[in-house]
Image (cartoon, rainbow, N blue to C red; front, side, top):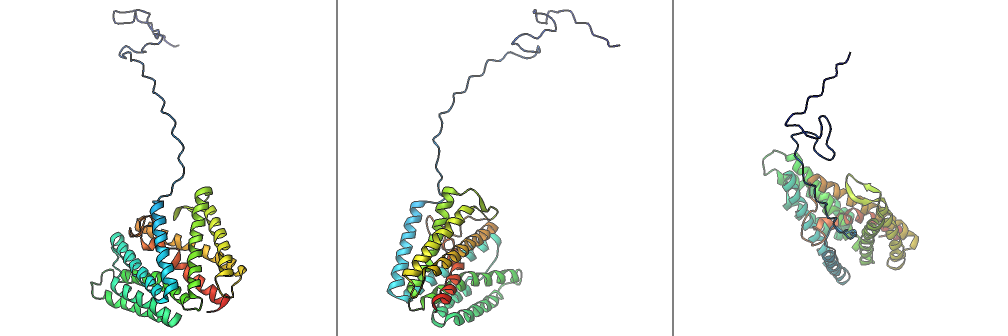
Length: 321
C-alpha cells in the first residue's frame, strides 16, 4: 500500500500563497530569484545577397594575362627563336618553383642546377633536332640528376632523384613539344592554336562552372571543378578548334578541329587536376607568387604542359609535320 506523505504545514519561510502550489509566473523553488525579462533582440537588417566571386584578383589576373599574351604573340610572329627563349625562361622558372616547394613542404631536394641546364637544353634540342633530340637530352638530364645528387649524403637519395627525374619529364620534356610545333612551316599558327584552345577550354570551364556548376567533378582533388564546367570546357574548345583548324592551320578542316578541341579539353582538365593533386599533397594553394592574380608560372603551365604533346601529335596526324 502506498504511503502518501502529509503536506507540511506552512512555515514562516514558505510562500504565503499556499503550500505545494507553484506560483503562477514565479520561481518554482525558493532558492530561485526572479529574473528580469530579457530584452527583445533587435533584428538585424537583411544582408544583400552576395554574388559568387572568384578566389583571385580578377583585374590583376586579366592584366597579367594580357601582358603575357602580348609577349607571346610578339615573339611568336617576329622571330621564332625568340619564342624558344620564352619557353626556356618559363621552363627554368617553373622548375625553380616546383623544386622550391618540394624542399619547403616535403624536404625533397631535387637538384635544380642539372634540371635547369638540362631543361633549357631539352627545349633547344627539340626545336633543332626534333623528337629524337628531345629524348636524348631527357636521358642525359636524368643521368645528370643522378650524378649531381651523389655529392650529398646518401640519405633519401632515391627519393630526391625520383623527384628530379619526375620534374625533368613534367616540365621541360612536355614543354619541348611546343618548340617542336614551332618547326613546321605554319609553326606560329600551330602554337597559337594550341595556346588559344587551352585558354578557351579553361575559360569555358570557369564561366560555365561559376554560373551553373552544381555537381562536383573531383571533390577530393579540386572541389571547385564541376561537371557543368567540364561541359563548358568541351563546348568552348570544340568550337574554337573548328575555327582554328579551318582558318589558321594549312590544309586543316573544321571537323578535325572538333576532335582537337575535344582532346584539348580532356588533357587540359586532367593536367589541372594533376597539379591540384600535387599541390594538395604539398599542402599549398599556389606554386608561387610571381604572377599576380594567377599564382606562379607552374599555376599557368598546369593545363598547357600535358596538352602540348596531344596537340602536336594530332596536328602531325591530320596535316603532317
